[in-house]
Length: 441
Image (cartoon, rainbow, N blue to C red; front, side, top):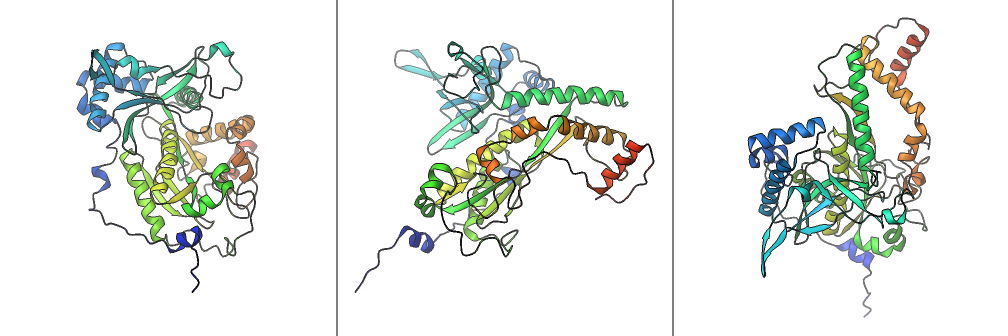
C-alpha cells in the first residue's frame, strides 16, 4: 500500500471552512464606534469645548492649551473604555505605509504607583526620531529631529492587534525647520491652497456665502487574494509582493467571466469581516465585487474629504492584510503581482465641493450655461496640463510603473478626456460661437 504525502497545495485545495452565523446587527448601530468622532466628542466634552474644537477644525485654527487638555482627558477616558493601554501618533512617512510609536498612558505618581494620564501637550505634538525615515536628503545629520502634529480634521481611532489595543491619533510629520517629512503635510497644504483660491474665484463669480472648498476623494482599492499555503510556496511573492518567474495559468482572464461574477463563499466571508472592521472605524465602504483577473477583487468607499479619505485608505489596506491572515489567505496590494493579467489600480475619483454641499464639477443638465462648472473645469484642465510632471511623479512607484501600459491599465502619461459633449462646448467657447445643449454623456 502506497501512502501519498500531501503537499501544501493539496491541503489548501481540500481545506474545509465552517462559517458561524452571527446575530445580525444593523451597520448603523455600530458604525464609527471605534473612532473619536464628532458624535463622541459631543457626548464626552463640555459644550463650550466642543464648540471650540469644531470651530478649530472648520477654520484650521490651533487649540489653546487649556482646551487641548480637556480634549486629551476625554479622549483618554474614551480610549480606556475601549481597552486601550497605549496611544500612538499615527503618521505617513515617505515609505508608502504608516508609522506609529506606542506610549503607555501610565504615569508614576509615587514609588510603585501609577495613574493613567494623557495631556494636551502629548495629544497635540510628539517627537519621534526622524533620522531613519527617508527624507530626500533635505536635512543635515544633526537635524534628525522630527515632530508629529495632531491633525484635528481626521478623528482618532482604536487599533486592535491581537490582545493589544492602542489609541491612534492621525498626525502630520515635519522637521525642526517645518519641512514636510511625510505624505500628509503636502496634502494638507495643497487642500488649504486650493480652498483659498477656489473661494476667491467663487466670490468673483458672485458667490459670497462660501467659506471653504473641499477636495473630495473616493479611492477604489483593488487587490488579489490567494491561499496562505500557495503564498508561502512563492518566495518572490513573500519577499517582493509579485512573481518574477513562472508559467502562465491554464486559465487566465481570457473568458472575461471573473469580472462582476458571483463571489465565492470564502471570499464573501472575508469581505464581510473586512467591512465589519471598516464600519467600526467609520469608513463608509460601499461596493465590493470581483475584478477582471482571477482571484482579484475590489472595495470602494463613498466619497469623503480628501485628507480623511486617504487616512481611511491606509486603514483599508492594513485591514485587508490583517483580516486575510485570519482567513488563512494573503492579500496582495502590489500593483502588478502577476504577469499577463490585469494589475491592481487605486482609482482615485476626485472632485471639489463647497461648504454648502455644492459639487463644483457637476455640469448639470445644461453645462454650457453653468458658468461655475465651466470655470472650475477649465481651471482643472489647465492645472493638469501645467503640472502634469508633478501629477505623474505623485503616482510613480516601482509597482505602479510596472503596471501601467498593459492589460487595461492606462499609459504612463497624464491626459484629460472630457467626452464629446464637453469637448464640443469648450471648442465653441474657444471659437466664440454658441452651442446647444445635448444629452449628457
